[in-house]
Amino acid sequence: MIRNASTADAERILEIYAYYVVNTAISFELDVPPLDEFERRIAMTLEKYPYLVVEDDGEIRGFTYAGPFKTRAAYERSCEVSIYVDCNARGRGYGRALYEELEKQLGTRGILNLYACIASPIEEDEYLTRNSEQFHSHLGFKTVGEFHKCSYKFGRWYNMIWMEKLIGEHV
Image (tube, rainbow, N blue to C red; front, top):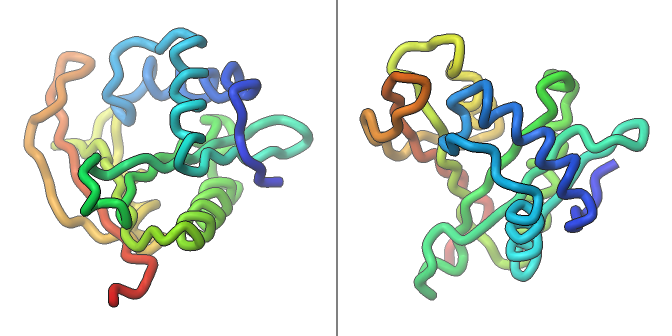
């Protein structure tokens, strides 16, 4: 079941996210944010954009949300999207289901362009593979830009790529 998230979900959402902060270079955060900060992030997102969770057997297994691509008014039909699935629940279709619902909801709000900012390894290692890039590519995103050695985590440098998916008609 996919539903709208609320700040009441913050503890479980943060639990899922914390794995990626502590164990991977997927998130470029170095420290797990405190719960009250995560509640604030969810509340701020929900003011304008969808924040969705997927539940299975009554437990949240993943989440996705959108936010501004850029804050200037001319970018209002574009947004940045993010997704995280419980590390023990990957490969079950939760990510695809979340993104499909997010895309649908954003489309009804007049969003035409989706952008994903993705950590990209110079060489795959124990902290980062190309799985996220491959996942987004499989869902129709195309790489449109790359920043080299812009993130330093776990004693090594990582690249960052921007991927784009056009979901509406530009008239």
